[in-house]
Image (cartoon, rainbow, N blue to C red; front, side, top):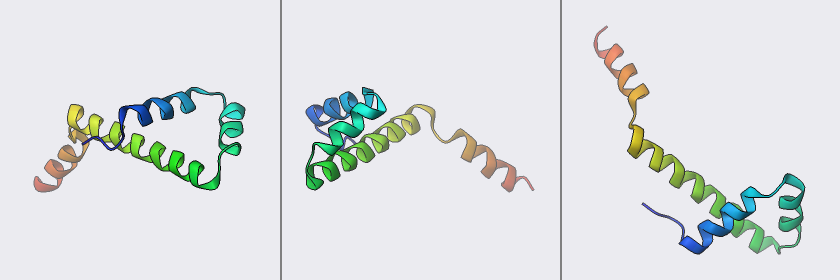
Length: 72
């Protein structure tokens, strides 16, 4: 499931590509509401990456643990 619009995702990727001081400067130039939207979008992008990883790799580690527990 995609949470972000392509434009929002590109903007978040741009912000995350900045150096730490540049990122802080960008956040400082925003209103509190704008900064909260950006931080929320970063969280949504993180969730998208996790979802993509889970789709690609599955839950191999969890399946291994469940298998070991069942075999006890």
